Length: 181
Image (tube, rainbow, N blue to C red; front, side, top):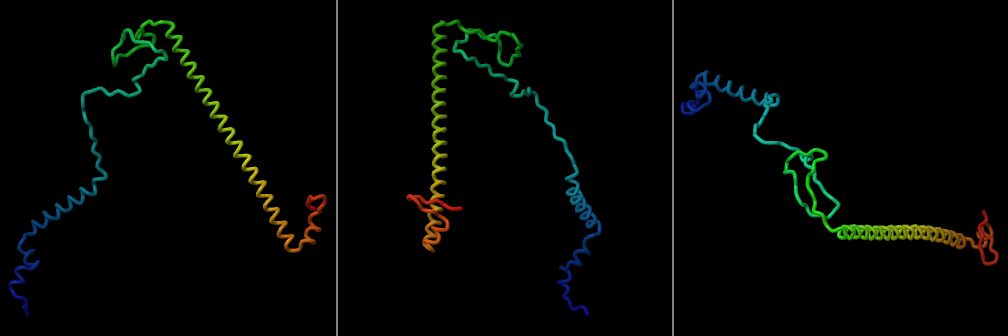
């Protein structure tokens, strides 16, 4: 009844299982169960990450840029970068300059603004004229379309029965056609 050669039986799975004890099977199953349990538990595990570092964190909004609408040179600065200032503190002083220079500067600003205003008005006029031309063109195209439709309708009626149609729907007198409705 034993038809299988002994060499095949030695290399079979059954002989392999018989060689190794059940303790190694238990270790295998425990390790496999631990890996599967860890993978299943990963979405439920929360680990907080914190980093400690020395330094100062400051928002960008804390810095305020100061601009002046005058063209003067700075004489002296009374504050340092990063220093906190209060309302009414003197931050810097400007050099006193020639009043003629200030008048010239303000006159140049005025002429620049007037030139800008003239350019804006010209642009507005151009846009208004362009819009009016477009509106007139649209009206003319609608009138032309209506005339073409009327002419094609009249032509179709005249070509079918010219006398009957003209007598019935139009009255012709003094080179004008009037529609009887």
